[in-house]
Amino acid sequence: MPPLQAQGTIKIGVITSLTGSQAAFGEAHKNGYSIALDEINAKGGVLGKKIELDWYDDQSKPDQAVQGVSKLVDQDHVAMLLGAYSSENTKAIIGPVTTHQIPLLIPTATADNVMDSKSPWVFRICAGATAYAKEWIAFLKKNGDPKTMVIVYEKTNFGQANMQAMRDAATAAGIKVLATEEYEAKAPDYKAVLRRVKDKNPDVIYFCSYLLDATTLMRQSMEVDLNPKYYTAAGTGFSAAEFPTAKGAGRNAEFTLSVSQWLPEAPWPGSKEFDAEYFKRYNSHPQYHAMQAYQSLHTAVEAINKAKSTDAAKIRDAIKNLNLKTSAFGPIKFDATGQNQHPVLITQVQGGQYKVVYPPDIAQAKPIIPAPKWTQRK
Image (cartoon, rainbow, N blue to C red):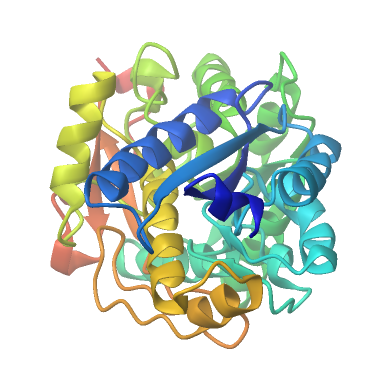
């Protein structure tokens, strides 16, 4: 009898960033997974057994994420894997996952190259960088039709992938990309980059940044009096729960536009209930990273239930054939490449809160464009 059955539980391995530079996102992951775990086990688990999450902290480092695959699969004999958080770490584990022939469900990594391997063991529940860029172009064309853009991105797999996707999409749509500015993550000063952007005077700035960078970039944009018509972003740092608060950019976050993969107001059953439970436990409202983790675990358990087995190949095949018409994260159905076709929302920080401003059929507010100049803000 396999160890996981002998213990009376079914183990699912989770790789995320509980420490290091991405710890804020790893904590959101852990909170989302924990709510799902309690819900699942309260209903009896799956296949007559409770679910047990086997956590591995990748310390926000790709090499540690790779070690996590070996530890969770070879030593702990998990049934499948969820993770990692960042695109950099997720890209690093694709090869080991494929070698170990263990199903992997990716909750949050948006770089398109995490799916390049076409591995039959890899599935992604979130939308990717190309989907972000496509939605942005649709939004911009219907909201002022700007003519020029500068892309500012951090030197990571996430930043580079989103820069490339937006540069391609903008160019194809007739928006002139005046410059692409790369920077090192966690640098203390981006003023030189921002002054070069100011000299270009673009209609749109598109940031691809994590939380610490996003916070500093907006503060220093104010300090150098940089005033594009649109401050836009590829989610992540600009969509983190902390970003519009005093822990992030605070009032400097106001009027920034960003993509989001979920908000409590999203029109999917279970969204508001998840938000309420999250607030009850953690005294803050969740952003999409927590929801992606929550729904990933629910999806994994649904697949195990469909497979009626903890055999890796049977779980993989069950994921391939899943067709959830609805969930708290929207419909779940993977295409032949393992990609879930997830819709993208666009939000704007208004009055210190994220408001859905696109697509129009679910918008909570109209976008405020152009962003007021810094000298005109109260």
